[in-house]
Length: 141
Image 1: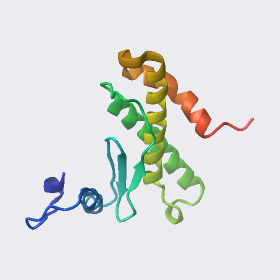
Image 2: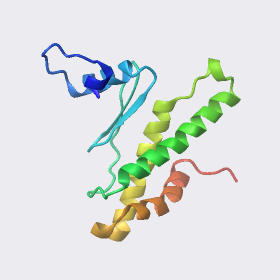
Image 3: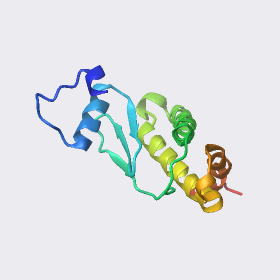
Image 4: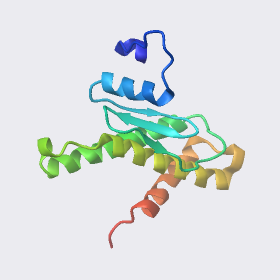
């Protein structure tokens, strides 16, 4: 990604977080999620957010797709909330939307693994998303 965005390191090896932050700045408005043992979320020059919540000891195929779809939902909700509150004066917080998606996906993975163990597949995560979201942000009665 650094190469595609024209980020140059002048022969120096930059720290991992610096690379992520530089890419987010160079992408001009992009929010970048880097999956890993700790998910890192960068947006422009804002501090990098870290999602350290334990997910499952096994990442199944398609878990990144679940994260991407969940991020899209939270991003759409962030945009809608910003539009309701004034638009230009309150831009959507896409970094927080991506962090919340990471948190919910990791929670769903933990619950799915607790039930399915090593036979867990991406569809099992999808079944757990609603319950995890309800635990994080319960609907008002």
